[in-house]
Amino acid sequence: MSIKTPIFRKKQLIDLISKPESVSLMVVGDDNQSIYAFRGANYENILLFGETYPDAKLIKLEQNYRSTPAVLDYINALSAQITLGYQKNCTLAYR
Image (tube, rainbow, N blue to C red):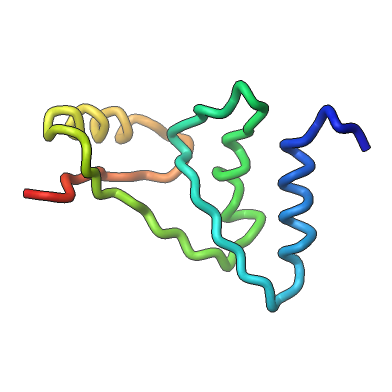
């Protein structure tokens, strides 16, 4: 085992401890962001999560508390063109 591959090893560890049927696992991630790539994070872990854990329940957080309607319109137009990942439609949390 090499210490130089910690990110992949973290996923392997999660996979190992989540094997028993009695274990619950919660994961939070955004498939449209990879802000920790500089630390070796791999966005494919979140994209492939459903394949690794087919019984997982996906809860989309589509309410936005910070952006303006114009920004959300732009984000949604961009998201509609993305073929990789989960489809989302962001809405304002307040109206």
